[in-house]
Amino acid sequence: MSGLNRKWTVVICLLAAFSLLTSTCTKKKEAYKVGAIFAITGPASWLGEPERNTVQMIVEQVNAEGGINGHLLELIIEDTVGDETKTVNAVNKLIEKDNVLAIVGPSRSGTTMAVIPIVEKAKVPLISCAAAETIVEPVEQRHWVFKTPQKDSDAVIRIFEHIKSKGMSKVAIITGTTGFGDAGRKQLKKYAAEMGIAIVADETYGPGDTDMTPQLMKIKATDAQALINWSIVPAQAIVPKNMRQLGMTIPLYQSHGFGNIKYAEAAGEAGEGIIFPAGRLLAVDSLPDDHPQKAVLARYKKDYEEKFKEPVSTFGGHAYDALWLVIDALKAVGPDRAKIRDHIENRKGFIGTGGIFNFSPEDHNGLTKDAFEMLTVKSCKFTLLSE
Image (cartoon, rainbow, N blue to C red; front, side):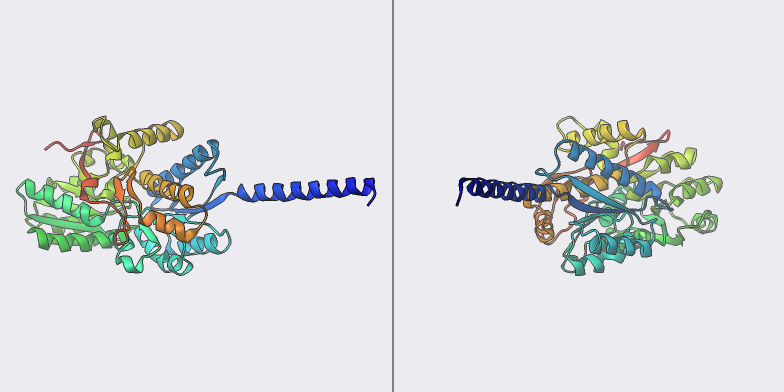
């Protein structure tokens, strides 16, 4: 082989090696795709908007710091409008077309339940931002499904504990007919029997109803000592207004679905004194500095409120926890759906906005009733309930 040929051979080999190296580096830096499905518009937009805002903020922060082990995080967001059919279509798209590694959301319990069979069949981890306990139970049928909001059963227990501490034993319940409302109604009836609480009235309303006066007039005619409203729709503000119009003065308890200050603002003066269980995000300023959640809560609250110029909400916090669980799993195990699932299922001591999570093969929520504080509304603001 002549000297010239040898030189060309060397050049060609170097170019081939460089090409291979470049290809390998490029492959290593491919973005990690994660899906997000929230009710950004529609009747549940007060849930979905802060969730969408939160995950977008996290992605910006993560990518600004170099991504996940050198990979950019690509978030593909779909608006479910709170509709089950749209949610199903969105999840199918994220799995079949976008090939996402995991999905955070949906915002609502009913839409989450609609997509569980899909993610189970496709074997894609889903971390729901909805609260109904049936989302993760029975756990043997929810192998790929997790959730970050506290359990509705634990919310019920905290409400009943407070009611009993005030010497009351007779309550009325009014619940929405959404998936969240229906699940809450079942838990209220279950734990009332177990905790010695009598339900003297049991009323419901549809997600589009704008006047609950007929139901409340029936409740007013009973000897109920307190009323519990379980919903995630704007009726959370309508019920207290209707109660005020009817001259009802019994205490009003709301579910943990009340954790957006916009609901209290919409209720106005009628919302004064509402009592509800919530995570500590809404009362972070009242926490001692050495509380294990304080740093995470304070940082999220500061970042969110500075960026979006609006108060932080429980619902954005659910999305914060869900996406960070996925990010931490990707850091630990890489882009493998099964390994991501296994990592989340065995995650212990994850400090989130909803509490300190301890997942297990028997518990895909990882929280107890101690994740809740009892809050109240004072002058259209949330504050810790003082006994």
